[in-house]
Image (cartoon, rainbow, N blue to C red; front, side, top):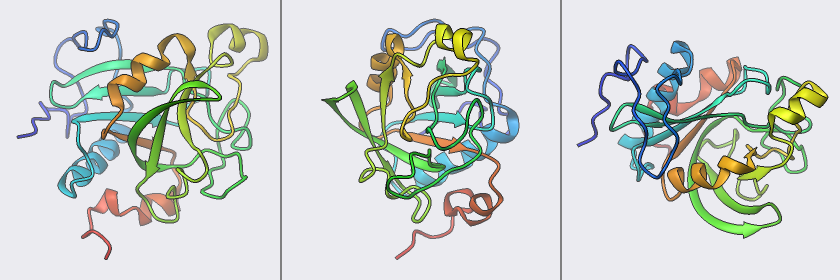
Length: 218
C-alpha cells in the first residue's frame, strides 16, 4: 500500500529530509515546493495512482512560475516522504526568457508543456543519456512523445551560465538538467514515475482531470 507520510495536506516533510537511495546527495536543507503547488502535485499524483498510470511512488515537480535562476525541479520519494533532488531546470526557447510564461502542446512551438507526464524509458541520443516522457493530458501535453520532449542534460543549465547571461539557456521544450546530475535524476524517475509541470494557467487548472480526478475518459 502506498504511504504518503503526511505529505498530502500539510505539504511539509518530516523534521529532516533524509538522503535518498540511488546514491543521491543529502537533501536535509531542501524545501518542498510551495504549499499550493505541492498540494496540486500531490492531488494529481494520487489521481494518477488511482488510475494505474503510476508504476513507481516517485513524484517530480517542476514549478515553471519560478525563474530559471532558481532550483525549480524537485524529485520526491512519496513512500518515504523525502526530497531526493532539488535542481535547476530549463524551459523552452519560446516559453520566455528568465521566466516561462507561454506553454504549448504544438509541434514546432519550442515551448514547454504543462500538466502530468509519465517518465518512460531511457535512450542515448543527441544530448546523451535521455529520458522519454509521455504526456497524460489530452490537448495539454499528449504530443510530448511525438515532439521529442525528453529529459536530458545540457551545458547551458549551470550556475556559470546564469552568472554570464542572467538566466539559464533554453531548450526546444525539454526539461533540461545540469549534466552533472542528469543521469542520477533520470535513473531515479525512469520507468513509470510521474512528472507534474506547474504554472498558474487558469484554463489548465480548471480543465485538468487529474486535479479533479474525474473518471478516466473513454
